[in-house]
Image 1 (tube, rainbow, N blue to C red):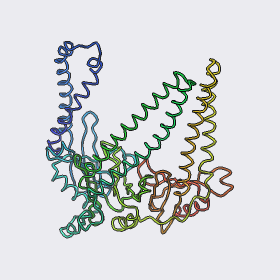
Image 2: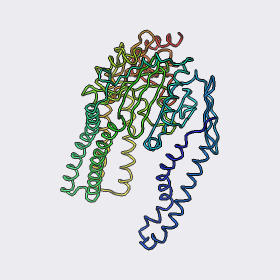
Image 3: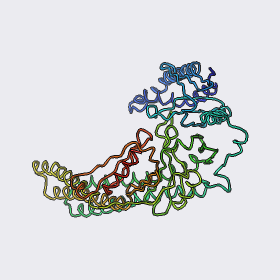
Length: 506
């Protein structure tokens, strides 16, 4: 069995330097941040700090060396084998025909030492949180392994003629290019989304501040009003600061995270690569795709743009970071009108169909929420006012608190009412030749396209009144990642579920 490349040790120890500092700081932060600690105490403690750092770093060194000596991989005639782990040893064996997704990752430290990490996944939901096979090798070796495994999982060997069939979709004449202009526009739209929320909050904050100042001038709230005004001002400042960080973060994410974004299609295999500091190369077979999801935020919808994501078990997961949502991105930014053209060339079976049904009742979107909100608002108001009455708080303060609670409830209901309007417009479904297209969402509009063969269950959620009116909410369970296997379409005709039942029977 071949061991991993030694570059694993060097790159890991380089990143462990920072981890060692963090560990030591966590344990000694009370001493260094103590107001009573003076310069002499810190100078005296410095040798102990260095010793602690050395001990922690030596532990990292020992672990990395042991991991290197106990880990390795082997490609046999029918399967790939992998050993890894120190205290908890893991041995994985995966048949080539069961390979679901192959992902290559290379961060900045890996590039310094010329290595990359290759993960191979079977797509099992029992192991969806991590890949079965992990290989650390030279970058060129990983590229060769990626091509070889792509050929072996199909049960054959790739020929020179097959290699010439590669179509790079990010060339000048390609289907999709994530250019600098698009990245800048993508960043601006994300900023507009944040700015929209801040603007709404700002209007509310200015209104509240004006009311507080008026009441302070009339001396009806006293100290309570001053505290409330300060709290509102602090919140507004925090939101403005958040917007600045959001702008910087979006800019870095679009230009660094999606650096050199390209899609490669070779026969039945699709390969997506992106990233500057951490380069991801994810490969999977066309028939492993379970669903395509198209998302639009409110601002994106107003401006006519969208994001296309994939549901591929093994592809959308990462062995070290299960929250790496970008690993599921097919197209990070495109015009909504271009979606049909893009999918027709890359994933022709997943072009969304137009809605065949639509929501049949607006009231159903807000009825239960309004009832629940009314009860919660009443309970909160009673809990706030009754103690004030018992302690003899002035009527002006009680009235202000009651008005504030009622105002918050009214704002929440107004937001929900707007959300219900958008949901009423968005929700719908289409069933066509074994393909299901589900439209759902409110402020964020979603369209999920999947095949009937990946539908494992469908259920109706209704109430006696809705049942009498012949309407229901549909919940469809798919063969996708364990945490995202439901698609919900609300307030549809109950008769539609019969068609879904027929698909399940077939």
